Image (cartoon, rainbow, N blue to C red; front, side, top):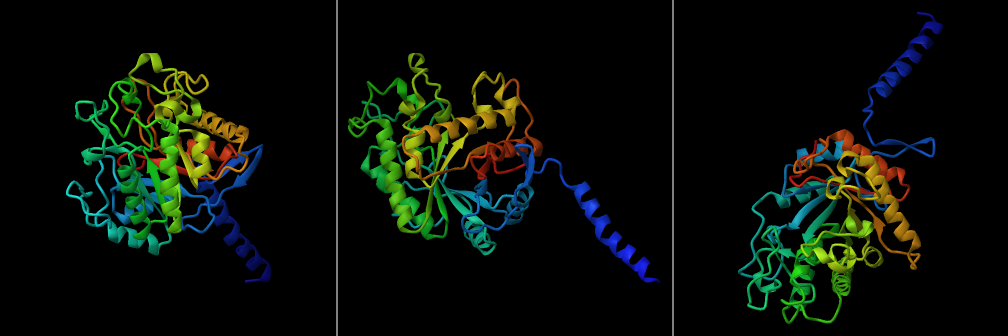
Length: 379
């Protein structure tokens, strides 16, 4: 075989596989995006490194490591969000908190093994703490004048952030999460229930009757948790309603429907951005009413456009804030589920999820994002 033929064969061995690889790339992949007419590359990191953008998936109480790993690889994520205090108030098994006969635990014995495997594989771990929504600790929940619990439309009660006992309870849980190995604490439901607006003036408990505003109460809670977590070298993220950047929230009291969401929920976007390491607006297209945000007729049907507008609203709020050095980085939560309860809805699969990721990246605001599916199962 002559030298010229050998060179030709070597060239073919390099070029043909390369062409094949490019042709076989998933066109829906968020790894490459276009911005300002130029194609830019976004690295698909699985293993987390310091200062690398956090890209998370919520797994709730799921503990199958291989399934979690496969989902991380599928979407180029590098972080996992695990329930440590779930939507009902149940706690992570063996969480080192003060014993209380009312404590109940998430029924799964594989969490320790999962955390160990995640740490061994250098995957960033986030402890989700459902802060104020509660169904177990009745002793800490807001009550009516007759002593009965105030219940929202989903039959859930809520703890009072103005109650010192509540602050101490949450501080203990969040600190314990960092101590057992989590890198970050993520506060969810760190707000007042919009449903309680109907009763507030006539059914206040002594603790709830404090003259501090709802915003002040939530800010104080975040400050307290942040101090505890940072002492242990952990990070703090706070989830906020998407309406905190859009401006309105539904309430059962019709006369208050146009009132600012921050005043009802106690979540002020800029105030929280001053305090947390990350702020996580939950900008699920399905959760916006028709013609919002900014006149989108059916937000759920237009995931890219909806997320693009929400990211612009977020960016505008931050850029126009009087404080120019806000602490928090923005890490939006994106919709990875199909909103079957909507009469007109879109089936959300990998394409729709990646469309949202592209919208975040195209915004130029952040490279961080989180995917949410209530069951932790991703298409």
